[in-house]
Image (cartoon, rainbow, N blue to C red; front, side, top):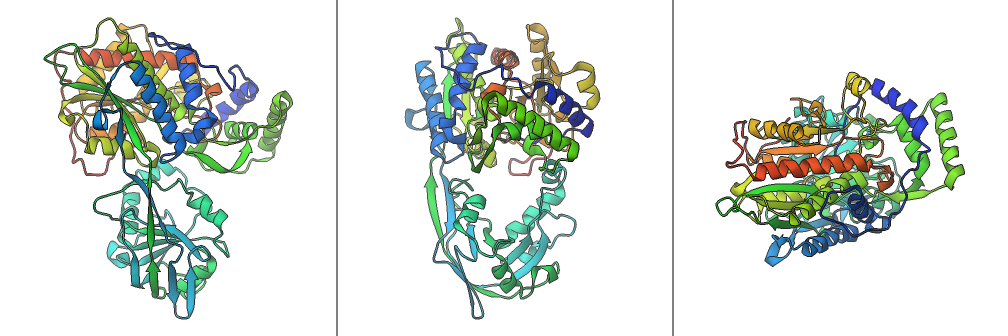
Length: 574
């Protein structure tokens, strides 16, 4: 789901723990599904997650067959549980018009007597729904991508091609950068251009390079009724120098290149996408027209272009990247390299090498999706239903920019003003002491991670009452979890409040709470598999969320909204 920051001291702490536990294989690679029951149990969660995060789902990338298989499994379970379909046309599915638009193979850019051809000198994608781009196209050079220190104005780039030199690595504190006002201004600048050209070091744009940067199932978006945005091109060195009229090394920020005669044509491909929506009707005639919404996202990030060694990846991340893809990869020093070799060799001695290319997304967000499904089953079998109705929504497209939750809240299948609260569940399957999140060094050292905790984001931002209720449930039940608010601080570098599906509900003034157990070395890695989940803690957090939903659904009034409401179209800022 999202990216979380941790201190160097926490990373160092993780190294020693990882060395102790790297060879532990307490859970199997596969688990034979068992019939599920009314109670929220470890066995049920295992049965569900081992199916949902199986290799056969292909990483559940939005727009892919695997993503659709995942939603089909959820819908079958909802039908078995006899929940009420609340999607389109009496079904459990709300269709989302996903699409991908690529530049047609016949497209060219002509600069004098130099003709640049698609598939050789450049490749690219277009903004969904855009028509062809033909005629003179001026060029302006910006400099290195992600540089927000000295921007060009939108007027300087409007209607032109802006060229970017690529970075050799991700910027430091990438989440903080993405949440900054400078980055939003950078995005506005790029969106003002007709074309954004990214210069590569390649002499030729081969099909392999195109698949790597522009995979056939990637760059998915919702087809708009009024297309906006810029086309994006990958350029080889020949194309870049022809467009600049100089070498890239000699280009100066803001300098004009040579005007090209553009003939860019676009081919749009409709891709499958859908939310899964169900209702458990409330027992109180007066309140059953109101809803407590619960949601998770079903998608993940698909398949790597090239396999990696699973054990080596996990050991390396435990030492070098304890937050997984949250941090850029780096080279190990001599001591770290020796540790990685020794630990990897010990794992290979146990079970051999294991090439892996599938991002299974067991925690992100298989854990949330299956946790919500387990909650739905518990309510479906309950002797007495809550007073209010429960609205279950499994969103697709969160990893692509919260596409499914935005689509649902823009096209709700129940009146949006009847939703009294939304509980978002994303990454709740971890929490062992060698998992690293944004918690402080002192917090980890004093209390550790194994005593039971859950991270809460946004629980009081719109409704103080909802936040108080969540804490009351924790006190009044057997949960007794440590409630961690560290990621919810105003101005937190991770900007987590704005980066999962609850944000799409909160923009309309709906009180939300985001439940998570945080990040770890397997975040957005092929190693995010069921065998590494902490099922005892996973069950406890799932039960806690169930109990919160029940308490909200039985309130004799809507949770009072006393927080600041914002413009639904405005950019979110924590």
